[in-house]
Length: 500
Image 1 (cartoon, rainbow, N blue to C red):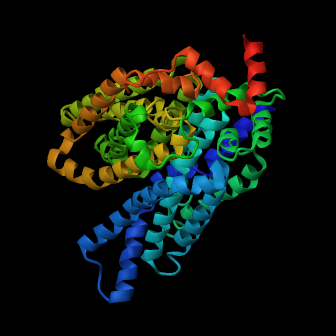
Image 2 (image 1 turned 90 degrees about the horizontal axis):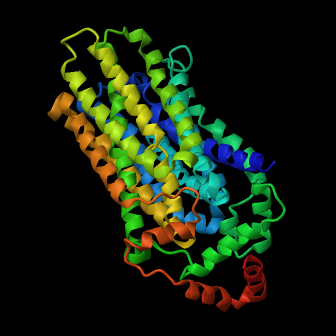
Image 3 (image 1 turned 30 degrees about the horizontal axis):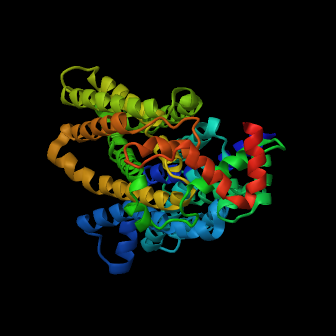
């Protein structure tokens, strides 16, 4: 039953969170023309003249990119909300944003208001910003260390499933039509409602209950349900040990986190990994797929179905990554993912430049695109979120997720904003920018990142102590630490004796 409780927390937690993020990444592609047409029609009705080309482009790019601004706002507010509502409470309350956004986006067309569409995209951005910080935190804290990576990959798998669902529902036979495109946004309410039905019956993060709420009984019950066993004293002891090792039990502010030398390299690592996650060029690939396929001579009416193959490959790669992450580890998957992306981006650049030479070249470009997507999802697509939870101990975690989230969303925004210009300037050599990013990312991780699989949060902190130049406590000091916390003194002593 244990796995059932843990897996349903992972699945339904992700369904109302990362699934919606993935869905919103891809859902605007299909109705793009209809939305632009709607903007134009509304403009004529209001101002009696057709919309200018520049204004039209501006309106459309605001509609698309305001999603990332919402994400930044969500990420900024997450540490506050989490303090008050806890991990699970935050995920639950977050569904309200999804429902508001679904309403605004669905009714925007009927109300003849493109402002409603823009505000709706902003609100769903806030939802995603909160979700992408609160969810990995929750998943990392509820799972036992030997499957922490596997449970954490649910986040990535459901992002990919969300992207795929957005592609499928956007097909012309389903909702990708002039008369029905607003229902694409109504769909947002479904995962949110499902999550609101299931999550209240699942426990809160036991680490949060014990270390921040001081609710020992609640934490014990939560561990019992998540692990499916009655004796969870070992797990509770691990959390107590983590609590004792932390200088401050109060949640650390972002400034304190930035100033603390003991977590300097963890922070640099997370910032670089998150920046690479967005700047490695996967977003740009989506812009291109259709163009490359057109060149390959596929007729326009079957393009949406071929684009589906990218969504399928993405989801499969994420699932495979989730299944092997505990065997292979985080470090090799990340380094392999970024290196493979660099190699195949280089090949893609070559193919794009030789596109006209031979008839089969465009097909090779397409294969390169699929391999780039698979490489991304094998590691870089989900592990940065798992690492943010793993590299920091409890009191630093909310601030760390806030910084990681802001870096993530700002990089996302930067790519969306700058890539069209880079592409105009460099044409088919634009992907070489990403080759550089992926290569630098892989090199940095190779030299700095320790393996974190199957380690407790304390072990991971200690493996960074060397490069942070922080002296490790000697075993004698650690023993003193244990004995000095005399609140649980007798229990602890008994445990130490039994373990000795």
